[in-house]
Length: 226
Image (cartoon, rainbow, N blue to C red; front, side):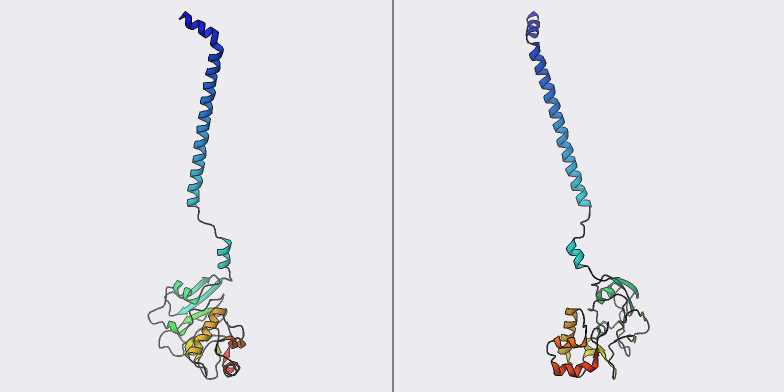
């Protein structure tokens, strides 16, 4: 015991230094451990929030969906006629689907459902066998009558002296024009869909197979409407 006291008396400074070093080392280790755990918890929280946050709309997707939106009216042989919102690239087939689809007696082939719907347009879906069935795509006019609704402007009706609207006519309606058969009618519709419609009657010359002579024969019987 006496020997121990003498050793402590001679080396007490070293004992204090060693004890201090142990305390400092323990404190640094504890602090470092807390910092590491805190960083791990922060990263885990960020990962969890990233999974819960829906992806933001990118500029490219915004550009794709850009276009003039608005509202259109659909009537006739659909399950839920009424006013529907469009986003600028909506086609009439999409509007029909939003309206619950066609009814069992609908004549979907009598109208051009591939056409892009424009703000303030309206469309009446005729029923099979209805007399004088025609497509209504007249801006600002919501006419929901019988299946024989006639367009207020530029409608495609196959009557004597009536002009066919190149922007709304069906294959059958185009074939009422002298010199236009099934193949040429399909070519006209293909050009219309590819270019977003006809801007002027003279655009018919851009359709494959329609030269100056054929255009001169067709021009009096057609018009360009909405």
